[in-house]
Length: 435
Picture (cartoon, one colour):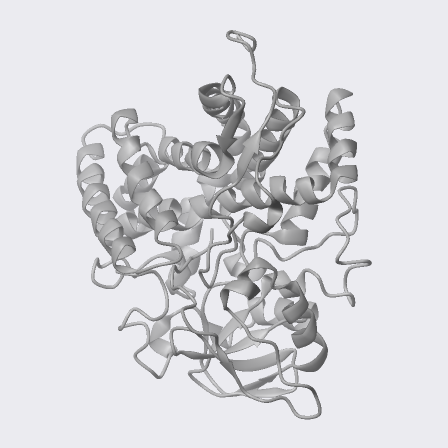
């Protein structure tokens, strides 16, 4: 589960000069968004902890080496609470999720520290245990096949909007207990976030407000009709003295929807794109799947997370006291952004890091974070990613990119990395072929 921001890089970020090195590369413009990895390699070598001015105007430290990143993700001197930022950037909507403060949704896992974080995480973690996720396998497979059924006879599709996007939305809605008749509303609200990923944040803020209103009403309704779902579990926990307020329950449900879905959208989209760009690895995976094996699929999804993962930068952290990181003096109140995409291609940690190897065994990537804020939804996202890729490659074995790769456009947000669209073509399934 990761916070995302849809701030667009309208102007390139201004970077402080680095002693003894050539000028740093331009960060966060559209060219960078297409392929940020050369710039991150430069930063790892010359300025592994680098102060930059983001497109929003906020100054922050970028952490790009694996060892420093792992330390920062678990460092208790880096708080998730925006109150530790000396400026007023969060209040002005320049950090965090657009509209969350006005919608009174600040008390979620991405904005709090222990002991509140410990308490809330304990309450929600049981929804993502291996057992609960395993019980969800048939439903994820059913959703996957249903979505493919919608376009399989056409011979073409946009894999982002017709497949990768709706799959996690419907999955998390069902896990939360959102009634089927209301799930399309959530698809629309989440779609606003995707569509505005390179534009104004106001549309996202409106969707946040609509989600918050609906979830508050749903919690009220469920108090009289508890079910086997996460929102019902949160209500039960509150009723049994765990001190979960209604505002906390609403914020928790919201962040699971808002921050949980786009990670999986991008895992699927980036993963298919990486397989297109590495056809020999794709062939290995398809042969493995045809043989009924699952090992390469499991290690392959982890490698896709490392190679071109869905979360480019970990969510905001703020120094609570002065300390040193990677040889740089971090001041109290300074924002720190850990660049997961850079850390996961650090040659000091990964052999041949710019090579996609689906059978990579030593792969302690940071794609889902590290420490107490490690992604709660990682087991569900892995299930969705494995199911989506295996089913696509099995049902549509000649799947291919339908446009020149240079025509693909990446969304320009700060935290997440994902494609706007992914047009594909394939041999159409005949009617009832998969029935």
